[in-house]
Image: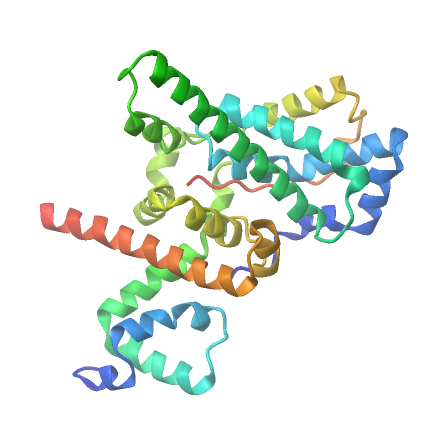
Length: 102
Length: 214
């Protein structure tokens, strides 16, 4: 889409205010439609939206930096000395634990 | 969209079974606690690491957090998820550590007038965290935008940084973040949107500056 039409749908600032609800699937259908019209026509807001979405999905790149396994063992050793944990079977204990670098 | 809560493995710590084992004490309790640590260790280390730069401090604060969890478990009323409660303990420990640092800085400043500046202290607190795997090739592989977002997070005001980290980095639900921060879910929503926009504005400004310099 080109020209001015998308601005009739929403001005840029209003479109940006809708990004949270749009991403969250909470924007009512008719607003969604107008929001999409704006996004299709407005390069600046489309770029803004892509960055907004990336920022909102920071948990996805949290997975990059697991610390060395000695860190976990160090903590467990400390807690063993405190009498808080006993010997356990690491094989049955899943490690979740993605870590993000901010 | 985030907000569906932490991963399934992490979610296991909110199971009634694990909580019952933790509260049972003795060998079962000790084993359950070890399991809790194995499941949550890196997640909470990451959370702490995003507030404190020194790896040594991060380890200490994490240990203090687990000690607080152990001490507080008998009184855990289950009004929130166990994971939310542990996050709140970790957050308190981080705040304690930062307050200690400010106090020490204050004492130092008073003793050696003018030796340290507030800016220096602030720079220390907000110093970019060194990645655990900061090998140059890994660092280079990270997308420039992700790196910029990381820096933008560091530049956020404390409250905005906390809400953003809880929701978009730790992936807590709006309700969990609200409980932890002592605000309403609607406030979380408003503050999170504002924080995201601050991040985007910051990143765009940096990107446009790079474009102008070329």
